[in-house]
Image (cartoon, rainbow, N blue to C red):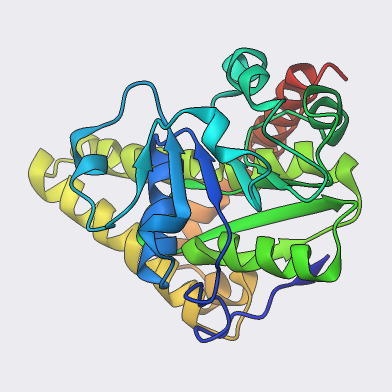
Length: 283
């Protein structure tokens, strides 16, 4: 896989002059939209298709943004971004078929929906990108992995700029990796939140007041994540730096790193999520 250029100057979207149609403005769609507007995308270049728009969508400072316009006015837009749940994909995409054309780049962030599915659902689409972001996108700290199909150099660069609005971007040409990617980074934030939850509960069981245990767990997980982000050391080295032989951390790690400990559980969890992603894709 190849990592996108993460320079903050590169993703600027103020020069985008076409029409971008965002289908779905839930949490992830809204995070993308806010990122694009922050990077200079003009509201007049955006149309949002969202049957149940949240109040904060209407409150966005985006003059000219079109909410649920007549699709006939959007014929052959430059970009269509599908930020909808995979369960409603067929129903939501069908009205777009007459709109999407050979010059349209379609970017999908639907879990489990393959490039083949997109090609069948939108047979006139010129270029496709299947992407998997994760929820830290809402604070600009997400990571997205994308796989292209029939994209020109300019279209791929545009897709990268759009996806980079919410964090780092990685590219792969091997779509078979997407199920495991979904299991690791797409679902991964839930695993981290569960760690914080379990650590707080363990603190309460050890005698800490609930509010203090939750504060300690939250700040420990958040701070450790930021240290991992900033450090040149890998996770194993950072773990070793905290662990003194015969100390308290070592005693805890003897439990967590036992034969049926955290590593085994994490492998089982990722395998289960990977298998579910394949079933969603019909594989």
